[in-house]
Image (cartoon, rainbow, N blue to C red; front, side, top):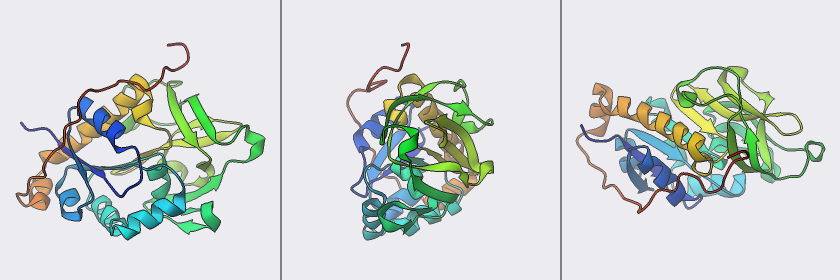
Length: 243
């Protein structure tokens, strides 16, 4: 059986190659694309992102992909938002004077206050799992993952039912969300060693189930995206504490 095809949404914002290497390591056929129909034809989509919320939202809309991402999520296709991509999935961000997000996850993104410590929150921190989910299968409570961000969803600004894991940085912040087929991580799994690779593997596994479903075949309509292949896979970009 062929591998699940996973699109990385290329809208000019994000470290796409690191995400690509992690997905290839997880066994996916990876497509870097900004083409709507190619994205719709894939078994799963990753929405990456780095930088400012407003600039990323403008880039996504400017590429005509904001509505496409929402349509893909509503179709039941697995969608994974990473770092700023995670934030874009929410209803609203306070960054840049206040901007609307994609509204696929309920809640708001707020700036981390100075009382929490140095901002941005940068480096390794531990996950505190709050419930089981397909995205965190095989991930241990207390596992270290790598964060770089100044804004975040906080537990009291989002739907508690969507929160799968938090991290403590002068108080809790939302680290992982799962709502039906919409999944997201505030941290960078591709920089988070074996834990991050496990998360990508879990996502690819969900995409593989989509790959063999009759609904996926109907949606795909026989089109075949052209995969890209990155040479070499690095399991982690840095080393977590205690490793």
